[in-house]
Length: 212
Image (cartoon, rainbow, N blue to C red; front, top):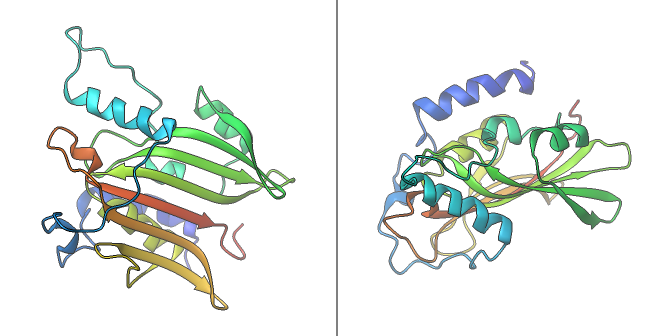
């Protein structure tokens, strides 16, 4: 069986060639009116990412943008990451986070400027041995097919029935317990000038069993 690390380049190519791979029915592209929305995202990190993407649509006269680090989804969502890598990859990292025995590192993620990219708040949780145990992402996207394909191919999440009207849900479970989950719901307000914020994504990835 191929190593899951070797699948990352394949997933990247799939994301570019067919971002709607898991949405052939077009259910996420139906009119959004009347659907139950996600809770409003008030996180400052998410807001900063969204502001960058909004500015990228109408740059200033000199063409300069307040450009944050652009980190592709395929690079950001992997369990080979270390605290040192996070500190090198981002200029600003919030470390005042803790969850039981895990230490959190929160950053602003902008994976690119295409509709299939994601902007939001990304948090890595490391154990005492500096091994990444959990990844959490709260953000927005214009086309959710890319992130859905990534977590499905690499981490084995399977599409299941959403718990809210309008929700598309992917889960990976064992022994009756949910290990990882991706939720996609229509944004509360959809604006023409913000094509990257049509959907809200919430992702919780738990380190797969036996992952090296």
